Length: 302
Image (cartoon, rainbow, N blue to C red; front, side, top):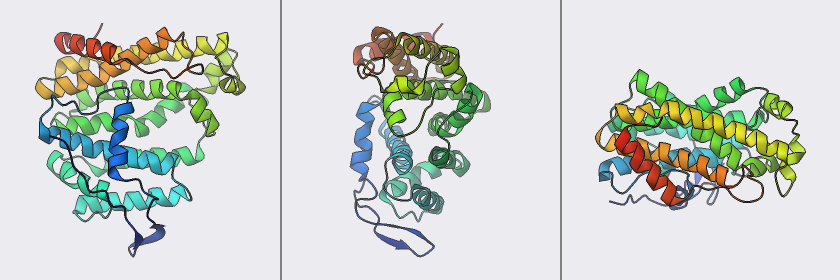
């Protein structure tokens, strides 16, 4: 069952939140947001999942990507737009959201019992992005991932009714690893936007400089650094994949797919010589499927 969402964008000022007035074109259409699922490293909502589960996962993905758009791509005052989205998220929990993507989220947060405190972290991460452009150490980057990535996995566990403390901790490892890999894939793009998600301590350790990100190919030192970061993400995926074995049914299928996408991305980095500058590093569908089947059968990786 394919989710169908209204494509209207909000226009006009919200009298309860007048700091930002949306105009046609300033918020992306929901169809355009959902279309981005095809470019993700992992299957967002596999067709083998039940229709109800897929609707919830689509609704969550729409919200996640809308917030990312507000923080990464939207013209004008992004802080104000993020404040507007936080206000509309509050309205979604009251059943009165004004934007189409937030309206689609309403039944998901109600039926799955997702706390607003979980979803608002994504907005906080994008606020952080407006003002924090560099990270001194890995611990600081992990703090950012706790806002930008980990709530995604926690929300998915709520969809499957398995948002338990121990399972959320495993999900956090997976989500952080996936975020780290995405940062490495987007190294040059993020730098062009003024952001660097590689810790300064790691750059120094490998003798790299931010100017290395502007070259057509990665230097030997940068490739060594990327390999170090990819290996770190791979270990986190391995440790977090215990979650697959702790789940059953459709939850196991979905989470195995997320881990598989990460492992396939690790393989893609290896095949590219750990050089994300020379070409786009993307996981192959065949490798993702192979990892997916193995993880589902074995309940994790070793």
